Amino acid sequence: MPSVAVVGASRGLGREFVRQYLADGWTVHASARQDADLESLRALGAMAYRADVGDEASLAAMTAAIGGSLDLLIANAGVGAREPTLDEIDAAAWTRVMTINALGPLLVARTLGKKVRQGGTIAALSSVLGSIADNGGGIWSYRMSKAALNMGLSCLALELTPRDIKVLALHPGWVRTDMGGAQAPLQPPESVAGMRRVIAEATASGVFVDYSGKPLPW
Image 1: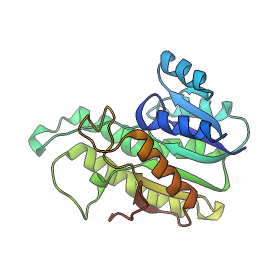
Image 2: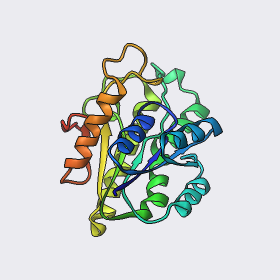
Image 3: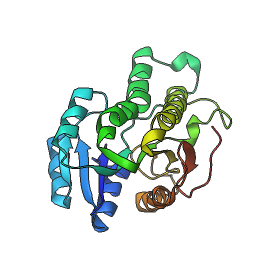
């Protein structure tokens, strides 16, 4: 059966990825940081590991614990930030957002990516807010972190060309999660089902698309 690793699966979109892939018969490896979340993931049927995208040692330990190869790796973990102006950026908070949102998925790819088979896929959750061409201003740290992530994923796609691994930057839409808020129009099952279709049907690497498959401007 096919296998997937979902990094950042304690709630929201990550947990929904776990639920849907399990329902389709996949072997699912999932990470979280808290004991209660690990127990909950195991109760669903996933193999759960304690890992933090900001801690490469924990990602390496997860990599070592996974037997066999992966067909798909999903880097889902992220944090939000909403500074409306430059004056409101806090340097320490900015560094945390950049570490988790921009560097974290690349650390995931550097460690767990070694488990992805030739011809497999690495997908990371980006955001249309990271688009430089479609910039509405504000939300400084979050926008910058996702723009940096997009560049990293573009570089990763080129580096992994010899292994024929597709790399995708996915915008999940505006989803009703803790980060998206109660006013968001999309529910997690709809967003994740769409992203799963995009992943399954992908033929190109180094692309930036939304959950419906619509190409987005870098």
